[in-house]
Length: 158
Image (cartoon, rainbow, N blue to C red; front, top):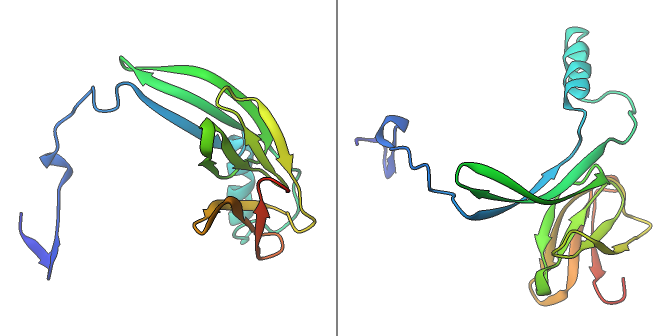
């Protein structure tokens, strides 16, 4: 390998070998914003052909998926899947639970895929990212892109 820039090395794909067992036995959480990707792409392409870029008009909220799968022996095993209105981001919580944002709420989902409860706030709109407060793990930091805000929400009190 040669250095292209000072301190930066280039790695080529041809230098890698296939390892079919690399992810064998790994567990994955999948967050799929919408199940209507063909419709969304066609709308975007049609808009671009008319000189528009990005979303320029309202659209209905799409239904997305949250799923837990395991990869094993070159196959995917689906443990469970649940539909949510445009889910975006998931994080792990204590006890095997997850916090999943959707269009206007935070869902606390158990390890078996059941929604244990849902957190609301008047400033929750088009939620995006979520994280735990490093100083207090009972508090979540929720990005509400609809209000350009980050909202701290207590997991215990809501």
